[in-house]
Amino acid sequence: MKTKTILLIIGLMLLILVSGCTETQQNNVGTPTGNETINNQSETGNTAETNTANDSTETDNNTGPQDDQETDNSGIVQPTPAGKLRSPYACDNSLVLSTFKTVFGNDITISKKPAPYGKTITYMTCNIIQKGAVIVQLEFHETTTLETALNSLEDEARQIDDQLFESTKETLDLGEKGYYFYSSRTGEHRIIFVDADPLQPVFLIIRSLPGTEIEESVVKNAAQTLEGLI
Image 1: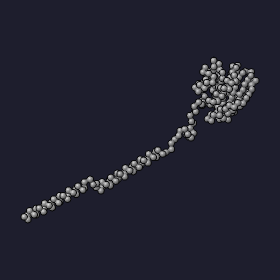
Image 2: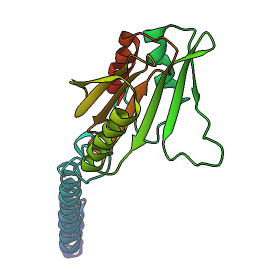
Image 3: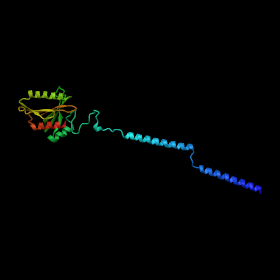
Image 4: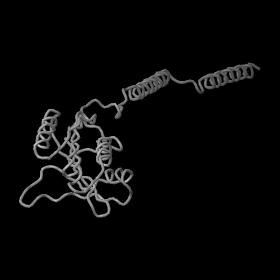
């Protein structure tokens, strides 16, 4: 009897011991250790810092000043406005031809006047030709300053006064300054004026040839057309 009682007590003690161990293991399942908690917090902190840094970088990249090429003040010469001529001037310029065709008709051609034999011309002379005859000559003299262009104008005016027989002179409201000459003896019309181009002033001569009986309105119309192109 004593032996059975002792065995029963031992069995109950073993049962209680096994039951306690099992409960302890179940309570510990899924619970992170102290080190794991620290690591998780560290990783979370690094991720937040990384995201914050990326957000800051994106903000910096998007808030900087934007360049506007249309308002560039760097001193670079801007493209020539549409419908305007710029140096170097050429007789075969498509803008010159198309513009003067609207004035004188589609049957005109424009050609460069050859340089005289043995001489080199440092300016450009263009003949506007209609029905095989030159109706108007356009002459471009490029200069470096407005003062130089105006001096060239006055010098040419003095030469015309001396050389164009029985001529009259008239001041024109054309460009910066201009003159109109007409010779009753030769029938020539000459217009000279300066265009005060801000980049490169130019001195221009527009004239009819002697004996061609070109009307004054034709030459003046050509001068006004050329002024509008430069």
